[in-house]
Amino acid sequence: MAVKMHILVCGGTGCSASASHEVVTELNKELVAHDLTDFAKVVVTGCFGFCERGPIVKIIPDNTFYTRVQPSDAKEIIEEHIIKGRKVQRLLYVAPDTNQSVSDSKHMEFYKKQLRIALRNCGFIDPENIEESIARDGYAALGKCLTEMTPAQVIEEIKKSGLRGRGGAGFPTGLKWEIASKSRVGEQKYVVCNADEGDPGAFMDRSLLEGDPHSILEAMAICGYCIGASKGLIYIRAEYPLAIHRLQVAIKQAEEYGLLGKDILGTGFDFEIELRYGAGAFVCGEETALIHSMEGKRGEPTFKPPFPAQSGYLEKPTNVNNVETYANIPVIINKGADWFSSIGTEKSKGTKVFALAGKINNVGLIEVPMGITLREIIYEIGGGIRGGKKFKAVQTGGPSGGCLTEKHLDTPIDYDSLVAAGSMMGSGGMIVMDEDDCMVAIAKFYLGFTVDESCGKCTPCRVGNKRLLEILTKITDGKGTMQDLDELKNLSNVIKDTALCGLGQTSPNPVLSTINNFWDEYVEHVTEKKCRAGQCKALKKYYIDPEKCKGCTACARACPVGAITGTLKNPHTIDQDKCIKCGTCYEKCRFGAISIK
Image 1 (cartoon, rainbow, N blue to C red):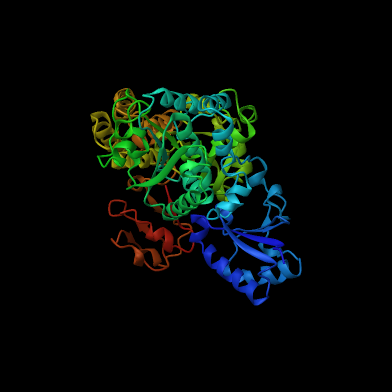
Image 2 (cartoon, rainbow, N blue to C red; image 1 turned 135 degrees about the horizontal axis):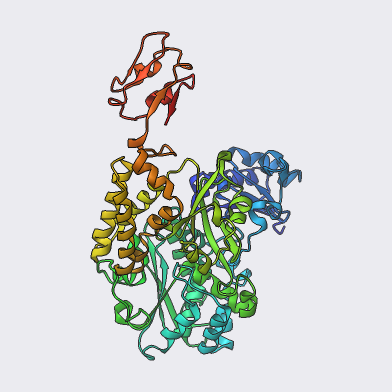
């Protein structure tokens, strides 16, 4: 009997951490117990994107979408849905606006405005089965390039598509390939995939590699054909064990099928790929630092020119693109440059993958057409701010980006608009903040990250950013002055103008964007010694309302430094000089008598 139904289970890192592998085990046990292994099959896929609702199980062909599935739900899914054809209502997604169950993901707000090009196979195929990739046009683009197009024609198609690098800089991909193809013709060249995803809260590249590794291998081979390279290298951080495993499986399968290695498809074209592991250094996301790391040297950037396309890995011409950029290549070849360039805006073509995180209801991985607004992403796809709180800011572009505010909500998402608003596209991290976030503390967090991750090669980054962090720490400790605010702005601009690489040059962006958009918060920290969000510990003050205090003594007994005094059944008081702002009293009070000011 042919398999009639497929049970797709998310096997990405997020769902795996929530025991989706146990769900798979239980589903298979139930299929065996009911003698249904010839009728239904469990398929482990990559990320569906809706991480907030994982683990996710999807039944094909009726497209039923189950959320937050636990191993104990497997029996009911098999007995009710697979055997009796009745959907398990309690596992369906409930739309928050209508309170109605939604069984098909096409009708969920999270997916309605998405357009999955790079993520086209994630959540649809078994990433460890090359035949499923081939069934969805995997390696068709490579075959077309090798048998029907010249390298110059392929490059022209990529140029015509308008695809720009998705790693952050947004350099035209076709032009980058063209430069590498014309550089030192006849010499050994290299194709490099940058999978060193280091932005806090970012998981785009990891999910792509876990869900559709063959699309990346195919695109690298196409690039090799175009620039005259026979060797590909994937630089991936060692913290991505699942992505590494699936890449290893995919490379082995592609070699066995004659899609990598010698004489690919009998065309005489040779191309092999190997993995290189990084140790998690943020600076190695910069292409010259990445290349040095692969060579066994310190991961430090170098002055350009020469660019990697002229002298890169082992001083040979090298093309470097990130994972998402490569993921778009096969689709452009298969569907045409005109199709791809019809999506997006005039200067930002196609779609962009974002990792939507922070104080947002629908945390997850999304792919949207360029030109969509922040408002649409946050309030429609993202489902609004968690807990009904007020939106305050969104950080785009990671540590190198900036904080955008309510006045920017209708800003279209494209390279130029985000830069004009004081931020940047970056690789695709998007962290949403609410009214409880302190923007001075946010700037301090990102500067702390940058200081820790600086390679230390140039003085502006090594010393300048440390000085910025010291000033921000001084301000959050309640010791700042108005002169410190002037110094923050001046020093930030000097670092932007003088740092060696893009990471150093953009590191002051969180400081400058928060100063520009939340100047009043900085002034409050300095002049009033006040943090309106209550996040800066040194500026917190706990007060007991004598009208609400019942004199139960719970707070006094819990205080570790004896800062609270009072007698039984009488209002208590807090000695501000003794208080260490630990918050224990606030947690212990059962009558809401203690407030933070």
